[in-house]
Image (cartoon, rainbow, N blue to C red):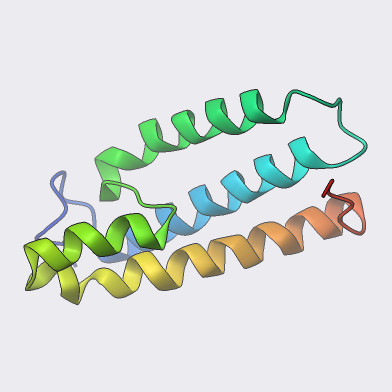
Length: 115
């Protein structure tokens, strides 16, 4: 089923998968770069470059959110169909974040992020 509001014609399933996977990778970058076992002081560089890459990949698919608050404001102003698809930008980042935590803890043991 083609998503009529995807500017490049991706299906709703493709948008769901893209948002989930990209959010998961973003959380993996954050958790890995802030882990106390990682070199200190490089987290902002890794997070910033990771977020840039994730947006370059995801913007053609869904205009990428990775942040529910960033999606809510524009959807409210547009109204109609945008509010109808807002659920995708709230549910999927939560699922992606949970997936990122599960994968990180399974691969690297208990999260030991710096506070």
